Amino acid sequence: MAHWLALNREDWQATQTRWLARLARQRGWLLALLLLGGLWLLGSHPSLRQVAAGIAIFLFGMFFLEQGFAQIASGQLRQGLRRVTARPWQAWLLGLGTTILTQSSSLVLLLTLSFISAGLINLLAGISILAGASLGTTTGGWLMASLGMTVPLGTYGQPLLVLGMLLISLPRWGGRAIGMALSGVGFLLLGIEDINLGFAHLSDWVELSRWQLAGGQGVVLYALLGVGITVLMQSSHGALLLVLAAVNAAQVSYGNALALVIGINVGASGPVLLGSLNASLDGKRLALLDLLFKGTTACLCLLLFVPVTRLNDALASLLAMPAQAYPLRLALFHTLFNMLAIGWLLPCRAQAARLMVRLWPTPQVPDDKVHARYLDPVSAAHPVAAEQALGKEVRHLLAQYQEVSAQALLGIPCKEMLAPDKGQHLPASGHALAPVQELYQKRVKQLYGEILTFGALCKEGLAPQQRESVEALLGAARNISEAVRLARSLQANWVTALEADNPVLQHQYLVMQERLWHSNRELHRLAEAYPADLGAALDLVEQRIGLAARRDREDMELLIRGHQLEPLQAATLMNDSQTLRRLVRQLIKACRVLYAQPALPGNNGNGAQPTGATASA
Image (cartoon, rainbow, N blue to C red):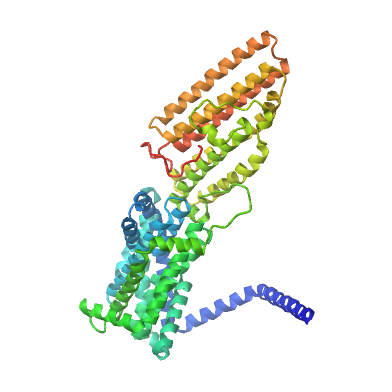
C-alpha cells in the first residue's frame, strides 16, 4: 500500500511539473491575450476607460511624488533620526510629519526599514515612526474627501505639472527633486478628476450598486475586496480614492464602503512587506508588526462593526458633518481606525518588539565567515541610508583587520593588543601566530566582497557629492584589504625569523612586532578619542613611520658591518621593514577617510564617536 501511494505521489508530482512547464512556455501568449482583452474592454466603455486612465495617472503621480520627496525628505529624516531614540513621542512626530509632507506612508516606512537595516535606529524607534506614519497617511483621505469630490482639481494640476516639468528639464537649477514633487502633485490632481468624472458616468454601463451586500457577510467580503484592491494597486491612497469616488457616485453603499476602508488599511502593509524582503532582520520584524497591528485592529473593527460605525457617526455629528457627506465620513472612519490601532500599539511598543523577536528569532548561521552587518538592498535604494550603512560596514572591516593583525602577526588576542599598555610581552615563538590565510578567508574576504557589491549597487542614482563619498569609503575598504594582503606576505618571514637560531635577527623581528603593536594601538586610540585635530595626529603617526625607516637603514648598516647578519637575512629584513611601513600607511589612509573627514557619513567632527564605529578600529 505504501509503495502504491509513493508511486501515485511521484506520478502526481511529475504531472504537476509537466503542466507548470507548459504554462511557463505559454505565458507570453496568455499575457498577450490578457492585454488584448483589457484593451478591448477599455476601448468599448468610455467611462471605464476614463476611470482606468485616472488610476494610471494617479499612481504615476504617486511615483513622481515619492521619488521627489525621497530626495528631499530623506536628509531631514536623517537629521531627525539622531534624536528619535531618546523619546518615543519624537519618533512618533517624525513619522507623522514626514508622512504628511510626502503623502506616502509606504515611502516613510521603506526609509525607516533602510535606516533600521543601516543600524541608525533600533526596532523600538521604528515602531514609533510606524505609528506616526499610520496616522499621517489619513490626511490624504481628508484632502481627497474635502476637495477632490467637489473642486475641479484638473485646472490646478495643469500649471503644477508645467512648472514641475520645467524644473526637471533644467537640472542645473538644482530643483529636480522639487520639480518631481510638483509634477507628482499635478498628476495626482489630474488623476483624481478623471476618476471622479469616470465614476459619474459609469452607471451608464454597469450598475455596481446591484452588488451591494448587507450584514456580516457583506462586511467581510468587502473588507477582503479592499485588501485585494490595495495590494493590486500598491497604493492605499489610490484605493481610498476609488472608494470615495464610488460612494460619491452612489455606486457603493456607505456600509460597504466602511468595510472597504478597513481592508484598505490592512492592504497598505503590502508594499512594506515587499520592501522588507531584502531588509535586515529587524526591518522584517517591523514590516511583520505593521501587518499584525493593522490586521488585529481590522479584526476587532469587523467583530465590533456596528458599535465602531456608530461611534464614527457620533463623531461626524459632533463635527457638524452633513448626513449625506459620505466621503468626509469615510475619511473620518479612516482616521478613527488608525487612531484605534496606534492607541494600543504605542503603549505596548516594548512588548510588541519582544513579541517580534520571539516570532522571528535570530537564526543560527552555521557559516563561520564574517558577513556584513549593515548592508542590504533596502539601504542601497536610499542614498542617505546607503552612505551611513557603508561607512559603518567599512569600520566593521577595519575591526576584522585588527583581529587578523593581532592573531596572525602578534600572536595575542585583539583585546589585549588594543588594551592600554600594562607591560604585556609578545610571544617570542613563531608557532604562536595563527594562520593568516585562514583568518583572511574567515574574517575579511567575504565581508570585503559584500562591501564592493553594495557600493556598486548604491552608486546608481546618487548625487555627485554622495558618489564621491561612496568612492572614498570604497577606497578605504581597498586600503584595509591591501593591509591584510601585506600581512599575509609578512607572516611567513616572521615565523621563520622568530624560530631562527640567530638572536640578532630574532630581536629585529620582535622590534617590528612591537612597532606594529604600538601603531595599531595608536590608531585605535585616535579613533576612540575622535579628536578635532585627528588629521594632524595621523600626520604625526606618518612622520614617525618615516623616522623609523631612517633608523632601520642605519641599524641595518651597523649589523652588516659587524657581520651579525647574512646578506640574504639583511635583504629579507629590509624588505619586511618596508612592507610593514606600507601596511601602516594603508591603515592611516583608511582612518583619514573613516574618521578625519567630517563630510563623510558618521563623521561629525565634534568629538563624538559614531554609533557602532568599530570594536577595534
